[in-house]
Length: 221
Ligand code: ADP
Ligand code: ADP
Ligand code: ZN
Image (cartoon, rainbow, N blue to C red; front, side, top):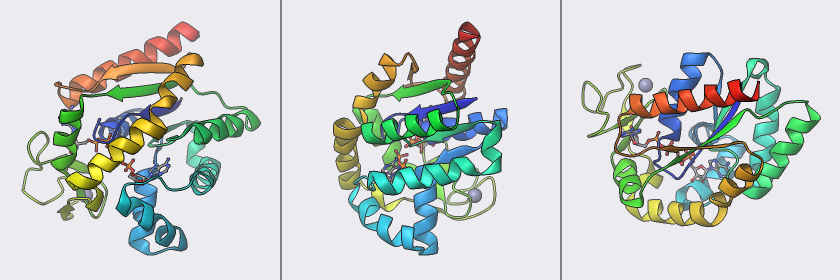
């Protein structure tokens, strides 16, 4: 199964992608996680990426396409993969198509999670991430058992610098201008599945994603 999870910041891509990947035993490729890890380790990629992350801007396409090319070569991707946060521009999508074509791979579905803007802001403002394992929580909607501590690994939770309101608004603007056009791009390729990510529990959203993916795959044989 080769899948893409798409949507504006805060829609629930990461949460759903983690659940889906774990349930079906395929790797979750989160470009946001890869970039944040590189920043944390202070690698050359991290030093370059940090400037863009802080401003809520997109990291240049050439860098992102390079990351995805390398990641897809790793052995765990042979059984399929789930991309979360890539592609984010038309040019990234075109490059991905070419990579898949060269490697004889097929995209099974693109899940587009949509949500109203006020709700996105509410989700992002309360988001807390584990510094150690990357698990995501929400102070109200999905709180950890113990405040400030990761349920999964006991690591400390923090608020992402780019989740502060001003940067969130910038990221939403960037989403509208650069990423939203991908909805039409994948619609025309008959790959798109749209899912309402709002006013429902994480489990409810998960069920609709799962059902939609499997009925699409079944229909297409
Ligand atoms: P994205 O990866 O699209 O930016 P996340 O998966 O990180 O979004 O989710 C954003 C925030 O909303 C997180 O704090 C997460 O715990 C919370 N969240 C995710 N799904 C739901 C949901 N269905 N209901 C309420 N809160 C949610
Ligand atoms: P969110 O889940 O809130 O949508 P991500 O964790 O996916 O955020 O991404 C965080 C930041 O990492 C983005 O604002 C952007 O700066 C950078 N980034 C992640 N993926 C990409 C990509 N495919 N292209 C360019 N920049 C990216
Ligand atoms: Zn953790």
